[in-house]
Structures are given as structure tokens and as C-alpha cells.
Image (cartoon, rainbow, N blue to C red):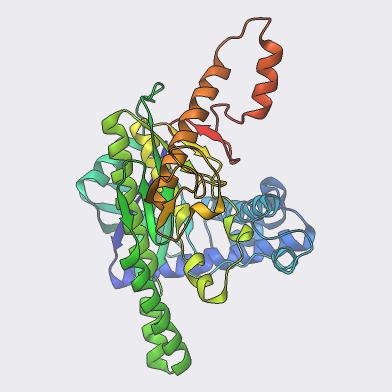
Length: 417
């Protein structure tokens, strides 16, 4: 399993100037290569290298490895754009958002990340320093700070490239590590259903509620402060906006990490799997009133789901993605589906059997039941079938999208995802 270990560099002013000049040169070269790729419609790495390699290397004084990484970074950016267009993440073909993404070239920020391989970057973990290539030559003894756990992971599992990036005057290296996965629990005793929400960020089928009221209150306060500073539009207001621009994202990321860690630890301790809702495309499907749009857009459900998935994979906990349709309207006791069952945001009251519970807790129980059912059907379809049952099994497999492999569609089993 691939993990990214981020360490903070502590360069001297001279070293920082060399790193900054290198990032600027690499990203200027990448933008020029992107222009050539866009104008000539050449997005293949080797084909684009024939057109741009010599110019990139000589014009921006880049080494051979750096020049090749610049060209590859450009091709990877266009490959990512194609994937987003194919997946519909940038709207329908012909829409304003789709045209905006396809009718102009990709431009790289002057401080965008630059990949380094082992020929351009060497680690001295004992001394906590790195030796790194720059346009001014090799810069040695660049100090970095890292925890003991990060150092152990780098020493044992570092493999592949590392990205150099600068953020708010601070320098970082993101190193790729191939960490071995734990043995997958192929026979979970049950599933832990997780209902993701805005008011309550995560609610488990065990009844534990991770409330997000404090986070949402802070987000509302930050939005109000940003609006005031933008309206003021003075140099000091702009400086303050720049200092606070990533604060909310960092807070949300920290909270999501803590929630994911608790959920996975509980599932691992009890020998259960985890059932999550597949919320792909929910922002496009849901229409909201204007006051609700900012809160909905800042809902980091995808990040929380990704954190749970990778931590579960590391721990050997199976993850199942279920269709979220009507989980908030379905009674976890009798199974009756009725819009009137959801009496408020917080409470659920079944019109059929009279069952009353917290709405998110009821939803998480439905998610848990769907996850368990999906896992059982997937395990059954994986078993060898007799000749007399093959025809029926084939029909059922077409109806059940539970193949035991990674898939983005609702009703999917992702073992150890």
C-alpha cells in the first residue's frame, strides 16, 4: 500500500533561495511544455519529449532527470484532466465548466510541486538531512524534521519519487512509501455502519455520534470574517486573508483523521468490517437553498471516507460501499420506507411500527445491514457453483455489483480498501 510521508525542510536562506529558483524554473518549463502539448495535441510522454526535451533542458538550465520529470508532470496533468472529464467531474460535455477545462492549456503555479527521484535527491536519515539537486547545483546538508514513526517508515519502506513543494514560506518533501498491508479479515463477524453527515460528521451503528457542530460553527465564523476582509480590501486585510487561507482545511483534515482512526480501531478490535455510503456525485445531485450551499460545499465527506478506507486497508479491515438511497427514510426495525418517517433533522419516528431513534443512528443501522447483506452475497457469488446453479448465479451476479475488487459504483465490496 502506498503512503505519503511528509517531512518539513529547514533550509538556510541561501538554500531556500536555490530551492525557490528551482521550483520557478521547473514550473515555467512545465507551462511551456503544456503549451506545446495543447497546441499540437501531443499528450503522450515520449512524443512530447521529442518535441520539448532539448528546449526545456537548455532554456531553463535543467538537468536531464529534471527535464524528463517536467515533461512527465505535464503529461500526467493532462491525463488527470482526461480522467476527470470522463468521470463527469467537470460537468457534461458542452457545459460551461467542461468548455472552460478543455479550451485552454494547463498552467502550472510558480510554486507547484516538483517530483524528484533518487538521482536528484538522497536522504541521510541518521543526520536528518537531505542532498537535493537545484538549478544552482547540488545543495547538501538541508535539514529536515520528522517524528520517530516517520523516520522508521522512510528507512524501511521509502520507494519511488518524492515531491518538493513550498507552502506559505515553508518547505516540504512528500516521500512515497510502499507499506505492507495487514492480512485481510476475510470473515468479519459483522459490519460497522457509518452514516456521514454535515451536522454530525459520522455516526456509527453502535450509537457513537461524532458531532460537527463546533466545526460548522467555526466554519461559519471564518466565512463571515473572510467576507468582511474581502469587502475591506486593504493591504492589511489581504495579508490577513493570505495567512488564514488554509486554516479551515487543516482543522477539518485533523478532525477527519481522528474520526477515521477511532472508527477503524473499533472495527479492528471487534473483528468487524466497515460499511460506508457511496456518496459520489452528491453535490451534482442535490439542489440547495443559497444559505446552505457554502456549508454543503465545505463538507469534506470524500476526505473522511478516503481516510477511513486507507486506514482500514492498513489494518486489514474490509470496507463495503453501499447505495445510500433511502437510508434516512427506512426504519431499521421493520424496514418500512416512508418520507414522513424523518420527522426532523435529528429524529426518526417510524409511521408503521412506532420505532423512534436518532435519525443518523437509524441511518447507520441501515447502512450496516446493507453492508452485511452485500458482503454475504459477494461471498456467495465467489463460491464455486454447481452446473445446475450456474445460470441462476450468472443472473444474480449481474444484479449484484459485489465482485471483491475496487469499483466506484454503489453496492461495492473493497476488501481492505
